[in-house]
Amino acid sequence: MKKSASYITAALLTTVSLLSACTTTAATSDNQLVNSPMKQTAMKAQDAFFKDFNAEEMKKYFREDYIQHNPHVPTGLAPALGFLPALKEAGLTYKTHRLLEDGDFIVMHNTYDNAEAFGAKEVVTFDVWRMHDGQVAEHWDAISPVIKETASGRSQFDGPTLVTDTDKTEENKQLIANFMEDVFFGRAPEKISEYISAEQYDQHNPMVKDGLDGLNEALAYLASQNNMFDYHKVHRIFGEGNFVLTQSEGRWNGKPQAFYDLFRIKEGKIVEHWDIIQEIPKKMAHENGMF
Image: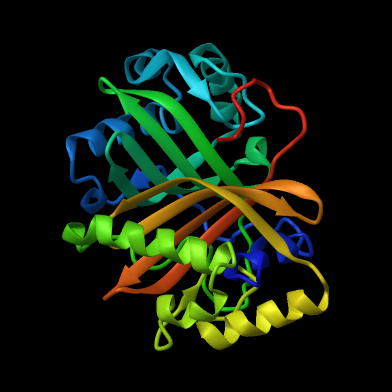
């Protein structure tokens, strides 16, 4: 594959220690984000799991045959319920920064504090839930430690949160599908400036500066290190209005990776990018895979 924007995260995060953020998140969400019945149900499920640690409430909102794709947690509702005492004892809290709905799917951009069970004091995640008859039926995620100091001065989760331009959802999803083919899969990488705004490109990858110049600088460095990323397959593209999330699979440094890239689109151009890249382990707690 040709050079692409998402070489950056996996290559550079490996050089950064697992730093925690100074601020503490609370188990609250912006009411403006919860603007549909399915989102309301999803947030009740999220609260039951990660705020109230309430097994009886979880049974209302999660199917018993809940399918798990987190590689470290067994599938089914029972293992999730068994996790509750440890989360409560740790004092886990969460905040949902972005909340998208696409058909039967809910996408959350979350941070968790006191989250050592997830790999660091504070982590940032993309969580994808498939809903069925008012319950969570399936879950995918990608997790990264929160990095305190970043090249752009932005965090891995700050920035605009409200969904706009809902009439352009399908148009924006197609834009990102084309971007993935042309840039990430190398069909026409020279078209990158046709997709990414030259006037504004806010970068939340912790090791990349804002703008196309910052992106090009990072790409040049990675090329000099012969440290390339391979996107092999886009499994799903989720979107609502001005936000589109891609869930992809590939390899970096000889290891399989799960790639989650969130884009904000304005007037037909990508103006903001968040991402998480997580190594796919050889052994998982189930046979469902990460996708």
